[in-house]
Structure formats: structure tokens, C-alpha cells
Length: 353
Image (cartoon, rainbow, N blue to C red; front, top):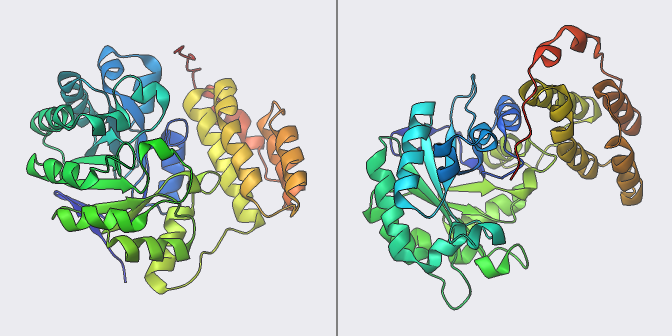
């Protein structure tokens, strides 16, 4: 049975979503995950003020691209007017859903009174939500945590406020900001948010297996779940969990040849998007995760050594051949790279800051 999630007028053909992650869910990753079957993959976190000023690296994070059936752009900031302008720009760029970040725990974000720091200022959070909802015709959603700390778990109250202002869904990571990523996500606590509102609630945190997906949904009563760090090196995870939830099976991982094909596709897409030199450098973060997450070789020490060696290579063919040897898979034919869009793609300047 296929489950869908309704957010405003947007129907999402599944209930396993991929979270917006800075440095991870860029356009090549989103295209790859969608090609592999993911129903929903959000952009990297986009700073609304910098987007309005046209800062190149921020504009790149909001890149929509062609061929994606769903575009979710996440905005972060503390100024209602700038967030509203960011929403208007996101809608003009083709966003189907606009998500507001009230959950990022990073010090550089909370130090600027943004992200999860907004859970400490619900009045300001309300003004931001109201401004954004009024600025766009697209459904607006909010991603939050349980609260700032254990003495101020106000996710249910903030979710009720969001619903009253016209927000169409909320995602709740089952930790407070002060927990960062320590301990275990509290899926039961997300249930209190679900009981507080009538809009869809999405549970997030520590979901990397079919068993955890079922338990998170059962404990929270949430309408859907969102994957975060579990997709590092596993862009197929959302699609495979979707199938496992539908048919009651366990998670099926790609074999050696399929996994290698996915990695090469990702590498080529990154080079095409950023340009050959920058694209390969940007991809190496993902390459490290692919090596870490694979079961070959079985010894963690051997995988760490292989990761270090592979990430020092300078050519895509060398990377593909080295990975093929490591995994015992046939080497892919990369001769077509010489005449592909990869070699013709313009370089994207590396922005500072």
C-alpha cells in the first residue's frame, strides 16, 4: 500500500522525507536521491537575507534544477521582512513548499538568533511565520526541535501557534537544542506535538532502519518521518525505507555494482553542476561517507585507510577504479567523460564566508 502525505495542496507520494542539510542536499544530491525514488528532498538551508542580496554560494544552495517533481526550499533567518522576501524569491524560483528553519542547533546559526534560537522567542517566531505565510501562495512548513532545553520544551505550543498562522505542517526533531545530537531522539515527546495540532506532524531523529522507522511512527503517531544524518553515503535510504514500510520487510541495500554505479553518477553530477575541479572537491565529502557506509571491506580500519587514500585522488577515473577495486566490482567505463557536459560545464567560483 502506498502512503501519501498532504501538505496544503501539495501531495507527496510517500511518507519518508529527506531533511534539508547544509553541505549535503545540494542539487546533485537531490537529483540523485529523487532518481533513486525519494519522494521529498529539501534544499540546503538557505539564508534569506543573503539570498535576497544574491550571494553566489547561497543562490547555489537554492538551485532548483530541472526534472525534480518536487522542490522544497528551506529558509533560515531572524528578520520577518527578509524571510518574507526570501519566500517570494523561492516561489518565483519554482518552490512547491517553503520550509522555515526553527531547529538548527549550530552555534553560528543560534548565535545569530536564528534556527532553534527562535524557540526561545516565540513572539518573533510568530512574526516570521505570519510574514512568510502572507508573502507566498505556496504551503509553508516549519522544522523545529522539542525546545531549547529540557526546562523549555515548547514544541507543542509553537506548533499550535504555527497552525493558527496558516503553517501547513511541522517537523519535530526529538531532541532539544542543548542536546545537539547526543543521546537518543525522544519520539514519544513528538507525540505531544501531534496531539496538539490538526496539521501533519513529521517525526525526525535517529531513524536509519526499517525497525526504527516503524517505531518512530508508532511512538509519535506522526504522519510521516524525516531522515537526516542517516542518508550520509546512502542516498537510496528514503526510497528503500518507503518500500520496507509498505511491504513489512527489512531494508534492502544495493549490491556492489549498483552501489558503485550510484557513486559514479553522483560524482559526475557534482562535476557537471560545480565544474570539474570544484565538483570533485565538493564530492569527496560524499565519497568518504560512501566508503564508511559500505560493508566492504568488513574491517572499519581498512575502510578508514581506503577513505583517506581515495579522497586524495585527483581524477574521476582514478576514484572510480579505486572504489571498484576496494569493493570488488567491475570498473565503470568513464571514457565518455571527455565529451560529456562535465568537461563543458563552467567553473563555479568558490564563494567566501
